[in-house]
Length: 560
Image 1 (cartoon, rainbow, N blue to C red):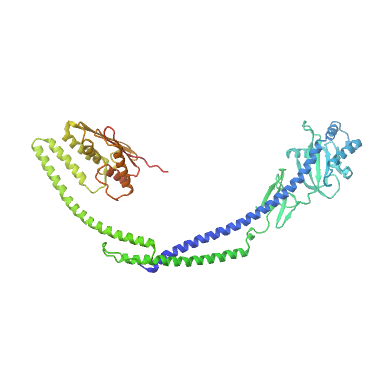
Image 2 (tube, rainbow, N blue to C red):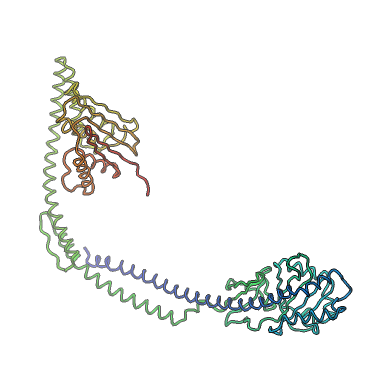
């Protein structure tokens, strides 16, 4: 054996395996670090979006709160219902100046303590309107804007928006100011009536603390109905998927934060260099350690290999290996024991070979003698003698045939029936038997001497201390995958302890196959051979009441 070869086979596969594992580990660590950086970035961006969404939510909630307070001003609602029932040309509040001043004052009172950016405007489809800032309203512009058609359209949009319509940034519709405002509109009506009295509009400038530029990120307000950008005006929706959204309490809009920059810059160049240096250093150290361990292990293995290679005969003694490795010493002892067994098995093989040569001669002599005796029986007019000799001859041929380990069940049944027939001829009316087997099982392969030795136990043990008449009943039913054999006699029976001992010995022999002496051709031998040739799923029972009943089952194996 090439000394270098075994060293290479020990060292290089493990070195390559460790390198592969380490490489994969480093890739996973790198990806985990990158993913964590991304996750932190996403979390920070999401917090920004949520924070600004809360600012906008709070702002819109303030506007909605003002609108709700207006709805619960009964004097305002009643007068707008009155205006609807008594329409007049122009604005009714210009005719009833005192009422207009009173309602305007009430509206101003609702804005006390709030930002001066807020204003309230109430109108209907007949051209009637009133505002918290009547002095700032352009009458001509307002009259032109308030038409029955525009009122109806806006009312439909409010109802389509679940009662609250949010208008994006727009120029003031009621004055000639160049400022831009957000407007929240709701219906003016009593809660106990479905009849509309007018529309309430709460107007305000966009909140100054809403940030649209957050480092490399940009913030938008989106109208979810048409996926358009509400704020900043004129901006386009991000074309990539690099954005997250934060919902608002008002379902029409949400806040969109677009990511800026390259996410992979989360791990800078220094981090990558540190990873690479650590990887190379660790790989080099592992290679060096693997080579040292490989030399330590391969030296005693090579020495043991040389010692084994120079053994010519099994009886020779194995030279001791120097190395101090416990496993190698145990392997050395195992080789020594193996050599002793080989020597013993060699002697047994020679003896078995001689006995086999003798066995080839003896059966032929018996077959010939039985044929002569049978022929003499016929000559003497006793056909019974001929039949018995023929049956015995068949039994001997069956037993002495060593070519096959298994036979068809039908052949085993013929052998068993020959034995029972001979026992019947011997004991005549003192013995009887029955043999019933399903036709489906006749071609099934079984171990030779599978049934007959179990029947023979009845005569050797069962009937030994029992007065005749004696009886043996044999039945075998089922399919080739799942069958049951029952053999029952009316003999002396067996104790539960002895029955359990037989089953225990059979299980032990099956677990330690070939170790120790199984013994005889009885129950233990039969179970062991069945499990060797058929399936480990062979079950056995021995009942000892009113004779012995032997039950052997093979259950169909199922996938777990």
